[in-house]
Length: 459
Ligand code: GDP
Image 1: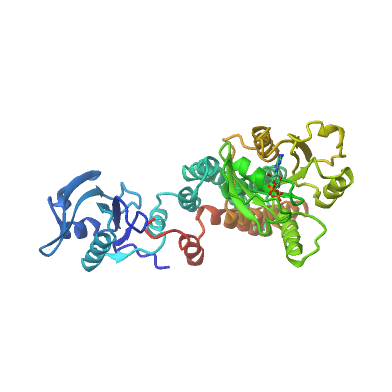
Image 2: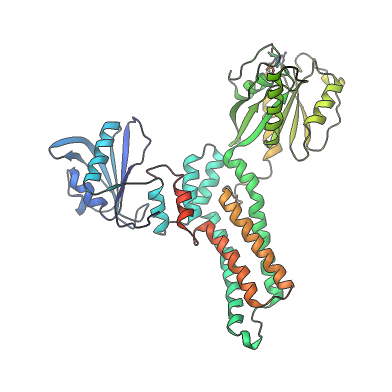
């Protein structure tokens, strides 16, 4: 990626297609001059920063549109360069004509994420904050929006910065010893160093652990609904979503393929996957469905096993629990159709393995659906999300943290084995390197390319 920022870039910042307005954004040293060359109204080069101006965009004598132009003079702008935003009418024709005109006047088409890349390169924020911009745009629930916003506002960055500063301090003491290596002195008290590395490893370990929840919050929590044909899985899915989405039928095994829907509970997205029924598969298609169920269960974070209290025998129920039970996978046993068999408890008292909870409902009559929703939330999230803790949501960060942790563990064993200062210094530098990759103190063109190419054009 070319990091020269002496040119001026242009792109549509609003979505493609027809809208009420379209916002075209220019950034770079000539942004104001280029906009001014096609704008009739005022001389934009003489206007103050953070002002809005009404006028027309003209191509020679031809008026393209009436527009509003917003001026942001660098460094008081998103990219810290001169930025101009032209709000025009949202016709694709008008937008494309204006962009082409601006390119003729000297601007260049922006690449994906190039505005945010410039903001990062110009020190507006660190790399993890730049990534949070993309997460914020992609957020689709209250929880994912909150986590992205916290990351954007620097909560996570400052935690990493603290860690880094402590490591730098450590490294500098070791370096000092290297300078005096002839004299065999120890500036850095080994006991204190060990304690420091211990503390750092604990903090990093906590961040690594937070990824499981962070990822669930960001992507939604995969929840599989499984059970025998006709147990009421599709009816339950509909009751949870309050809509007629999945096809409900009387013929066993009709939900052959999986259906995926998103259910929001207390700001968290649960991705509900309704699977084909589990039973002794006789025909080939059903066999595929059962296989798929097992596959989906292995990828999920929560299992809702639905059974029909009217038709399943206690033996079949125990069999299913045994087959589906996965230690560590929270499971809700959903006894369905209690409208038909209110005294179901006398028929079923299955032995419940750890992590399995029984709940009784009627999907058709919508009995106890809200209790079930609360249980779904409690089983996966409750007590784990307090709104203040830092959550790692990005796999790139997770990998960097894991490598940092390994380097720190190596440092610790180095201290124990009384290795010389230069070896310790090498391990510490490794840890610093990986930590720096998260915030972008250490970057490569490949890394930046990889991150920003995933952004949309215009951001
Ligand atoms: P699936 O094969 O597990 O998806 O089951 P369906 O949702 O298609 O339901 C099978 C049949 O059971 C349908 O006729 C539903 O109307 C019926 N059913 C589902 N839930 C209940 C319930 O709570 N009570 C009663 N009485 N019938 C239900």
